[in-house]
Length: 457
Image: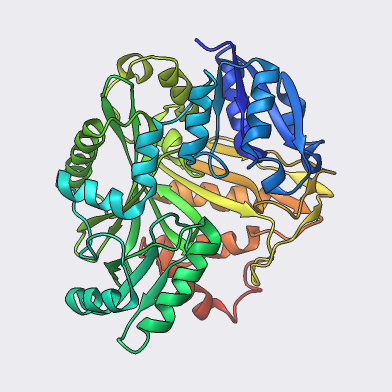
């Protein structure tokens, strides 16, 4: 087992990894920028090292600075959390070169899955259903038009090197394609340093379904079921739940088996998430894989009672799934997660500043993952996530009721938050009926625009 782990991240996920280390009796090292000097990860880690100024490129994304901190602290391993360097294959390779275990998949697998079109090709070869689309990267605007006419409009152009909605455009006609192609290309190049694009058939009003997997270093892979992440704004998830209201036990088993077989064949290890779109006929199509722990991993933890972060650490240390997992994994009850962001709940603009009051909810079946506290500051340099509020109920109805109560008791003052928005979503008849898809928020905001005062802030 590792003696000391450096956490190459910040905020709530850094604190989450520190908690896992404490439970495993492993010493933890926090890194922090000057803006995060007074953060909770710095307070609760066994050691803390400042690695630079607030700007990401000079601190959390500065690989030499992170590695230097790891060497100074004499750590055995690095946990990257999510975002930042978590899917950077070059960083994983540097860790290996420095004899530091990277708690994640092998660099070559991260690189394969990180290039979306190569990932599509690997999944297609293994028999995983994928959306019709281009075979490889689009070489030009003309080639994009040829594929669009072959696939049939509407299509969606995507960045090959990244996600999160950047470098992505929906094209509904031949006339729209040239401008949207070049806009996506420019955005992808700016965001990822790579302007390569590929194309897929665009599915109207799909559900976003993702499967959580764990894999050990001997090739054994297990599926821990699915999460539904359909409630999004501009491809950014706002609320997740598990299990999906549209998933059948048979489909869960079928997709889980084919995903596990495929990942075993390519040599995957550690935690990962395989993402799909589901059409109105409940057909699933692979879109991408995230080779890291997800923001929404607590949803799966609540319904499976598996600690995914501790599992990551144990697998990286050489443990087999047989020793990591308690046995066959079946979802129990229903879990919902709301991402509480420091944003104006209607304008979706960031709201940095000092938190004057912070009162998180508690009680049966309620979990709050956060690094925020009263008199703490939300810096303007980073992601606006304040907390992840997660609840579990015996069924979806109880989970909705419990989340509604928890949101009412969650008090954050000093900055705007998305709590009022989440309360309105939980009260929405379409959400309560399970009629959600990736266009839900657009419809929700349109129909509830004049009812903002019906649910108090």
